[in-house]
Length: 348
Image (cartoon, rainbow, N blue to C red; front, side):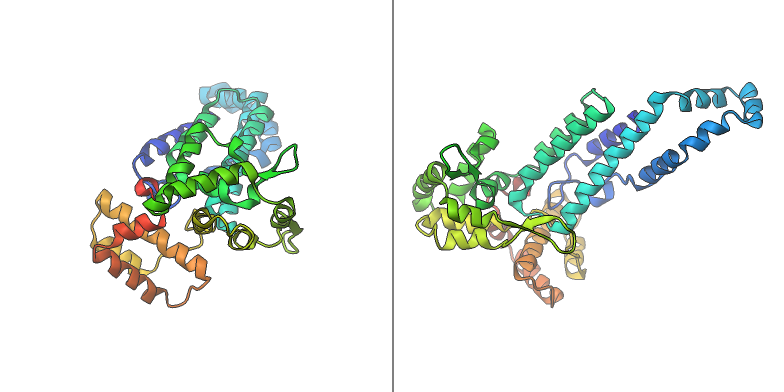
């Protein structure tokens, strides 16, 4: 039973190779829908006691004597390991569903991506220990999906957002470079230099080094990271989400080049969840065929349009605004626009 959903995961992973969405996943038509499987598992678990009792019913015993398949089912439901596997698969799907709901509800920012993936890895590890799965299939699948989805902007935004500064033994609040791999550290340097002019590149790297060694004044860092309880959900949340921007634009204004990159990245949305594609976007996609280049272009334009709406908090006149954006694309200026939003457009 445990192998069934894993094989389904692997099958759809193979089906999704080469296709991307705005946040790095596959296209919606190829995403594996586990809702029916999840409902089935919940029904099986809720009926576990009844299923076990029915095997002792006289009518069922008569069937078991004649039907080989029925006897196999009796052996399966009588095995404690079977129920452990059912609970394991149910728990895994529930975990992923809850993470997906959070992403949609919170409108994930680019800087939150790496911490979220670390959280997912930790939860998968706890899940593995709880159910003693031990084969490493899910961990490998998570890493494969991470590599496919990863964008250098994740690492850069994570490093530049004061929200993620870490207090060291001397009391300094420093950017979490220790949480990055060597490749991700290089990605930070490359992306920052590509988001500034050629003349400013060396200045930006010098400012990045200063940011790495000096960090932020403890008083300002604690103010940025201050949390309060959400009266609706009861969960802790950042008291002032705009404080990261305010710090870069005021106290850290000496970082002229790096500050421009920071403000540009840390409030960039990583997903278009909650953004509804309207007819302008859909007509543009249909009119440009179904080639890989056309689909990639459409995905990137949708990503840009969604971020502009999230930034303005303005969802009025969507048709007119999107029509204007798509007119720019048809005019041949979309490559410059895309490169201006995210320097490396190969894996948006």
